[in-house]
Image (tube, rainbow, N blue to C red; front, side):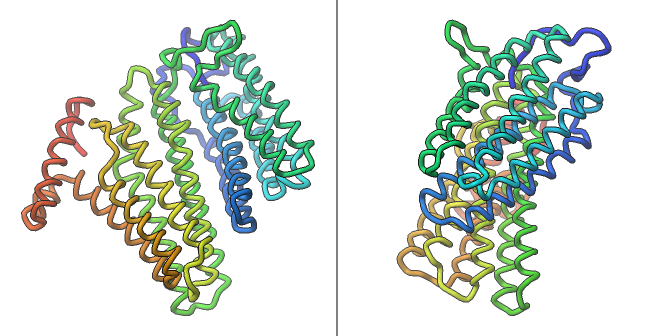
Length: 434
């Protein structure tokens, strides 16, 4: 995931050549991502079938492993050239192992624990070892860092296997959480090893545009999984008014989530990483770590949508409240932190604070008042719509200038924010525009 220094030597290198900012997402990478649509669907089904704190912890561990396998492969494809045959074969083998891992997900804490672990370790150790060899042969200074990454996965692999051999799910959960703790500490510590210094983020030379596009595509994958689940569930129901209303609410929620992330956040994040002198630092913080709660929130919301579609005429039960408000809240928190990292003010968006406050109130109402499930679902959609509208008015200055005088104090506040945002953006990136 890290590295820098010399360019690959010779024309026979399997690494991407040329300017680091020109790497593009290839068709093979898009093909690879299709497996993760299925993997996220498997996580959603796991959470629907297993309720409670223990099941939630297990689902988070499964997600953390799946995300880590995907994001490390994304870093690898940022370095290696998917158009070269050996790299193509490596990615296809990683794709096959990812599919096996996804198949084993529902019973990862049951009878398929060793299958899940075997597939996961095959992806992480196999891909990292391949890249370490390729970089060593190309004379790339990052080869030593890749060797450290292999050492991290070998160390955590012992804990993964110990967990798979454990008979009790609680014990397995502890072993696997410890393994993930080792792995997730790698990028933040610069892959520090005993008697050795870590690798500074300034040495992590990557294509920022490629990383931003890949993570944006994963957000679309997660949102698309929700759309698939919504359509499949509704297709098996009668076209009654409550069912149809729940279907529209689920679709509207997914569309608004897309709007909140892609209208401003994705573009500004891409601009930041493309213009930053240390794109590896941004990729580590904004994309490797901060995109995790974004995807977790989408998965939680998709679980809530399926619960709502299953019983639109009932009352808001605690499981529905937690899935809808928890998933939406984690999503807004994750996107807000990502935007805080990317915006010129380095502040958490006020619109997202407002949305989180409303979600807390809605959750309290759902837990104690038990409103109709359909009304509860639409209230969550309304909160997402309010956040979207707030941001639209804040960042699209022409609309704010036209509507500002009609909105009173709120309009004047939004006008000031729009002017400040534009000035800071121009100063930071050297170009005008939204």
